[in-house]
Amino acid sequence: MEHLPVDVRASLRLFAFYLANGTIDVELLDGIDYRSTVFHSGSSLEQVFAIYGNVLRVDAEGTVLNDGDAQYRVAQWIRACCDPSYRVEPPFEAWETELHL
Image (tube, rainbow, N blue to C red; front, top):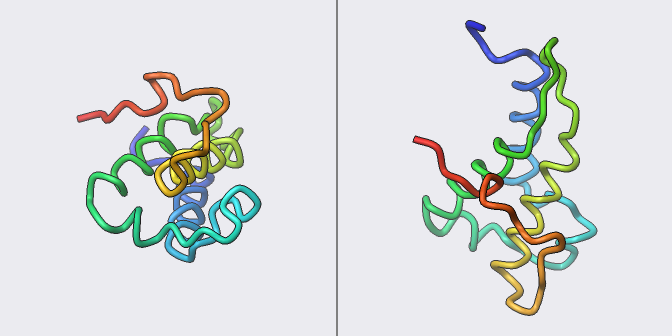
């Protein structure tokens, strides 16, 4: 594969837009302006994109299968960073938060 499929590129673009706009999963993050937390350091932003990329599933034709699930897992991570009383359910598995080199 020479380039990411169009569907994957579109999902990444929209994810970045929602993230920067403060509108990732508006129900879970209602009333939480997470942008200062996420954009405060490169490592937080790096973790957000790692979770999104690790959870995102694509079929053999390059069609994204679970963009909403990937965004929701990111929203859970962000919520846990902003609200120490929030518990991620189900807890993150190691593969979801792994940073690839």
